[in-house]
Amino acid sequence: MNLVINNNLYINSEELEFTAIRAQGAGGQNVNKVSSAIHLRWDIKNSSIPEHYKEKLLAVKDSRLTANGEFILKAQTHRTQARNRDDAINRLKAFVESAIKTQKKRIKTRPTLGSKKRRLESKKRNQQKKSLRAKLKY
Image (cartoon, rainbow, N blue to C red; front, side, top):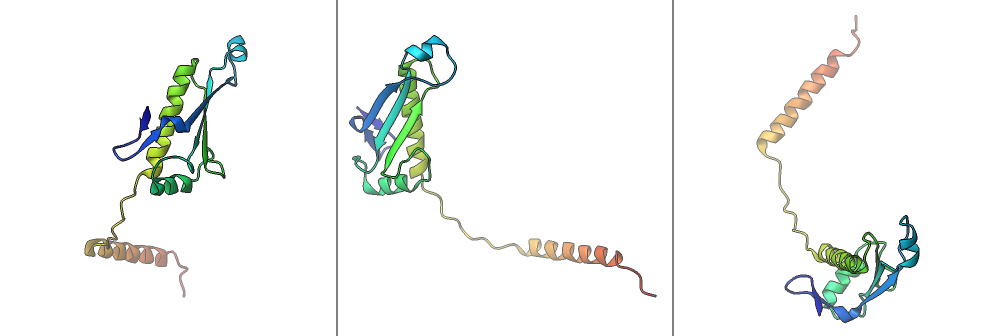
């Protein structure tokens, strides 16, 4: 089974490594006994996705990315292992989608003639206002 990101990209599920660990925080005996949190590891450098996607993913500044190109995520918000696993997969998918999104190229625009005139008029008003604050010379 593959994790589908978009029409052009999918992640092979064999590349994802899930480990069940004990969750942190409050929860009483359940937290101490049950390994409900999920640790997700994905080695981006050695994955089967195309190279240009790898470059985009590795260029992202994210604390979940290690220096050797691994994405590590910990999901522990839910009480069950299955829901935490689904949460980890959804968060991985959101990370990949945001990293590979291409930004629209910005089109330079010029100020309109009316906006230039309004700016100069307001500058003149401010000059007059401030000149009235000056001390009078006798």
